[in-house]
Image 1: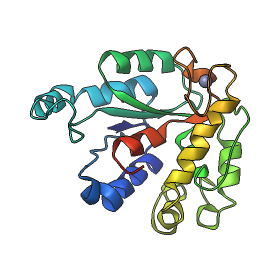
Image 2: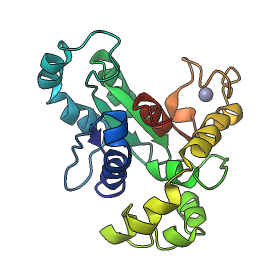
Image 3: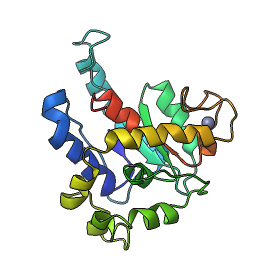
Image 4: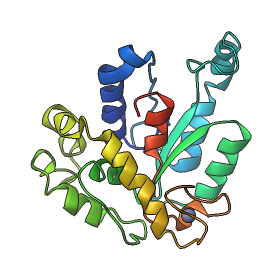
Length: 211
Ligand SMILES: [Zn+2]
């Protein structure tokens, strides 16, 4: 799995491994690079491991949940090249956990509902997240410790994944495309760039059997 963020996403995935990996029989190999990865390089990074994963994959029957998967985790932020990244991912069977405006919205949904277009800015998401005691310094500076997901933050997120998924799914009701809803999710023709705000991170947790 290649991730865009340098601290938050790798920490969060390390938490999933530690908390659920053994029970649910998975291990996430996280790839991230120093300055963060933009969407297309993020997909390309995970594709460096494509042949390795495909070689491994053939040992499993088609419907075996343990079959290795390639994932790219990236955000809307102010990035360009998102449609290209999604097209590249689709072509190569790389799954995407896309968040609009950012992964941090997924964290916020563990505590509250959220709505309203953010136009790629995470300022309001961060402000609301900081009202949680464990997250009171979250993204307050660029320091790694402020974006870390450890200790009391992990404790605060635990047991709330299901609620976060419900809130994430409910957000499809507010989508500007009329055919999107909680029940059906975003319609295929609904441009991910217009899914403001939204997050698909829960799909990863569902795939891993956590949800
Ligand atoms: Zn939609």
